[in-house]
Structure formats: C-alpha cells, structure tokens
Length: 126
Image 1 (tube, rainbow, N blue to C red):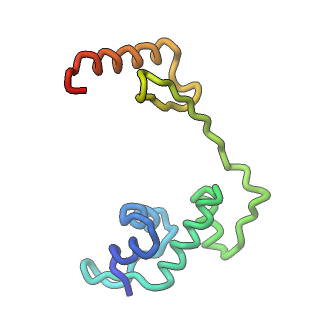
Image 2 (image 1 turned 90 degrees about the vertical axis):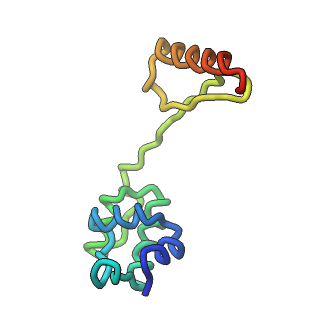
C-alpha cells in the first residue's frame, strides 16, 4: 500500500499528474477515505503502463480506451501523433527564445527581441 507521495516517487510521475489521471478516468481512485486513502500495486502498474504508452506518443484518450477495453494499442493506426516544430532566435550572445513555428509574426518577434535587449541593457546588474 502506498500513499500518493510514495506512489509518485515509485512511478516517477508527479502527484499532480496522478490526480489528473484519476480525474480523467485513466487511473482508479485510491482506496480508503481522505488522509487514510491509499494506492496498491495495481495503481503502480497502471501508472507504469500509462507512462510507457504516453512515451510512445499515444494520446491519453487512446490510452484510456485501451485500458478500459483491455485491448492493446495498435501503434500502426495511431494517426494522432503530431510533430511540433520549434524555432529559436538568439536575442544576444547566450540568450535565446524558443517558440512554435508560425505562432509569432516577424513584427511581434522583432518587438519581443527589442524588448529583451532593452531590458538587459537597462539593467546594470545583468
């Protein structure tokens, strides 16, 4: 039996994420009540399964469906894996900003770049 802190440490998954998985129906609620609630080896195994599938890029919705139906996830039909491209711009030597491609216009990027440069140049302690 584990409390949420022990379960988090053993699984490597944060307490917040564990609570989120419970809220989304991916993980059963703990047994017991309030401060006396506890998790079992089954909870730990389920978290490890969720983590394994999630690392393979499988969406949580599909993981939940697989866990509910006890069917294996078919990786070949997983069309929901989305690749996100990031861009980076060096503002000054040693400082860069990262942003998703096509989410910032060149005009806004120039304003952000200018703002950061001005901020750094105006701060003598920087």
